[in-house]
Image (cartoon, rainbow, N blue to C red; front, side, top):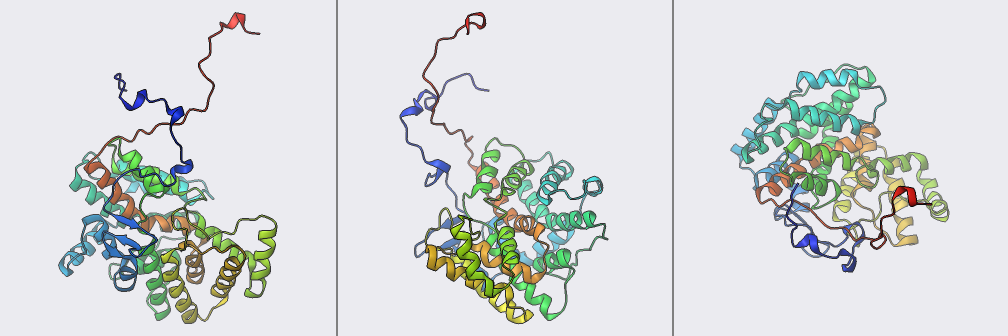
Length: 391
């Protein structure tokens, strides 16, 4: 605790402006991501999201975010080897999963598991920039295994092994659903890969900002990521695609979708998967994942979820002029893949861990402790009355 009063601490905050939810407030600098509704669109370190989704893989995007450039073939090969070597869960983590109460919220399990991974990391005491990158790669490899293991332990099912000959998305699909190898599974893995790319990074969203605030104290990487996971658990942030899937299941068929929207709006019910705090005129990521969800519907021969989604989208556009965000058509794609709904938000972590770790590294590379001020709304200074004189 400091004893000297800084210049900012002498300000009378009662005479300063306030933006609820920090909307529109510039809270820092970052070279990682540009979120723009104009011509630039969404950029990861300068690369357009549409180009990355169409031509890249999630592994390449993870490398880009963590190392600052797209990998060469040699770098990609070395990265794949490193991921394979790090795809192990420490024994204390498996022991923890064995005693987790049945039915625990998967994000609670993941949040606590992240703390254990931090304590058991072989470089736990090394907070150098180089060690943080190695820890980030380790987490990228460990989190899919952890999520799958937690789900399997909860169900009482045997663990599924990671396969070194499969891509990150193919392994993730297999770990969560048991599907691999055939053309249909490969098509699912491709759409899953695109969704991971689209979810990987999005500037100062709530979970990323909480990670950076924690990182600004110069604590360890795992502590900052634990903060991010706790933040992502909230339904206003990470649980949106799960809520959209629940909405589709409730609607049941395309024929009921338009009426369901009208009745929900009439009863002031919130329709999930629409709107964005920053992207007021539509989310470019939504159009990308919609295209892939449509293709996957054709391949799977199951059009129900995609048709419900398109009907709901049109009804919302007609009634409210609102556009879907990334979570909306992603939910339709995940339903087609057969991924358990309770794992949608942990699946988000498998992707966003890249952005979180990159932000933690960036924050601590030119750090300043985050210490904003509050607009005081309490009473003016009051005279203290001793207890025996109060009535």
